[in-house]
Amino acid sequence: MARRIVIIGANAAGINAASAARRLDREAQITLIERDKYAVYSRCGLPFVIGGEIPSFENLVLYPPDYYKMMKLDLRTETTATKIDVKAKTVEIRDNRTGREETLQYDSLVLCTGANAWIPPIEGRDKRGVFMLRTIDDGRAISEAVKTARDAVVIGAGAIGLEMAVALTEKGIKTTVVELLPHVLPVSIDADIARIVQKHLEEHGVRIITGKGVEAIVGDEQVRGVMVAGEEIKADIVIAATGVRAEWTLAKEADIALGRRGIKTDHRLKTSAEDVYAAGDCVENVHLITKQPMVCQLGTAAVRMGKVAGINAAGGHTTFPGFLGSFVTKVFGLQIGATGLTERDAKRAGFDVATGSVRGLTKAEYYPGGKEIRVKLVIDKETHRILGGQVIGEEDVVGKVDFIALAIQAGMTVHELLRADTCYAPPVADVWNPVVQAADVAKRRL
Image (cartoon, rainbow, N blue to C red):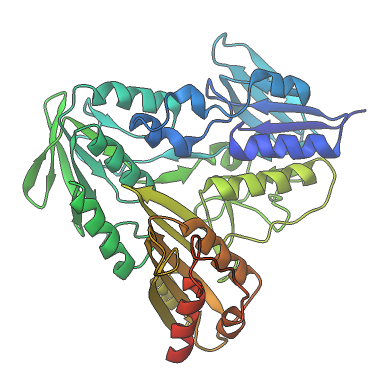
């Protein structure tokens, strides 16, 4: 009898789990359950549709219907999984359009239930004009509101918050970003790098308020503004970019073990329940450096986890190494990337650290058109291993971050990084790679 694989959630992790399972088992019955009307679209692209850089939300849908037919995947959109019975190995589902209920039997189950946008319990958060951005429908609602808005407040200065601030500003809307923590991108970069990013945003007309929270959202039924430290800031629309929380309701009700912020998984992404795996934004696994449990709600992590979970669900054997959290975004032409631990988080994790920071160029100094690029490395003083890196510049940031990430994964020391054999040609790279230069500065500080 063909193996029955049920996957709850048909976005980045879910489709990669299904595709990996299909490649391993050509005969398996693979069913994908998705509560949204769209399957497998890029949530990361939503701000760029709102800002007009991507023509439409349909462009974010990654796979045509023919793909599912070709891969023999039974995709059920607008369908909710309502209950899991891990002893009977069943999943109860409901078609949201017809109300029809059905029970599916599984041999392997993969939970890719994702995460939900979350807003703190701020007074007035239910007013008309307050939005969260997680789905295409959210994006459409914001795009409609943007047409008549003059002033906006974005709550939260993470990647989505800053990308939305750019999108709104480029639409001619006066935009203020309010961040409770001390600086922008507080999870991803250190304060010294954040100051440069904030200055860049302010030069493009975005007002940034850090270290203060939104006390209330004011207005009658429609939002009029927000209160921050006693000041009322005008807003026709408010975007709550305050993060997401793992959707683990099904797992919890099925008595599957949970961590602090996600569904607990092992090195094969197996949960505490027999033949049940989990992948994506709902998962708690370990950080590659600290070995401590964490969630990593990035698309790159989701697709890698999905592949591992899918292979194992189909009877194969592969492992997931853990999270490094390599990240990049772009605001008004400035690219900001990071990987591993920030200096702040490394110290919190108990490391005694040294850092090396440099300003370099993306081309030879004498070649026209080169852009400034800044690199910061975080080094463990005891082992001299690389713990993290941050890069900002107008070009070539992704390559530098990937370079650092690979060095971390390989367990390289700063001395080994200094011996890296890197490329040089005046139109594309300086003779000294800025990552290597930053390693040299860090070495001297050791």
